[in-house]
Image (cartoon, rainbow, N blue to C red; front, side, top):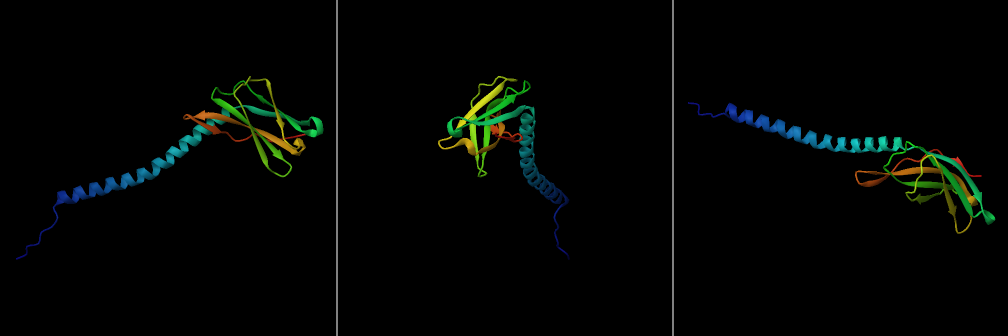
Length: 151
């Protein structure tokens, strides 16, 4: 006689359910990481779009051109989450000198930064500004604005 024993239907069903749950867990682990990165990127983009920082002018002045006077404007709709402004001064050799400005902002008024170098500020060719915002208790740099030529 045949004494073959098979796996019962209940055991097969349980194994299939466990296999399906394992597949769902693996897919969720992959997708949840992707979604978290995307949502923080969207939040940063939205907060940075609300910033209205406009570069105005850049003049090289002082004795032997040792100062670059940079002016920019903050528009009134600039959000309360603005924690700083970075002025990025591009030099003749292509380097970028970042100058961080504190938090004393008066919207709609011209903000002025005087950049003084130990040698010569005449190599300041262009500048742009970038806002710093607080997002999830971290300071995040927004993308820089268009560049303005220094005179």
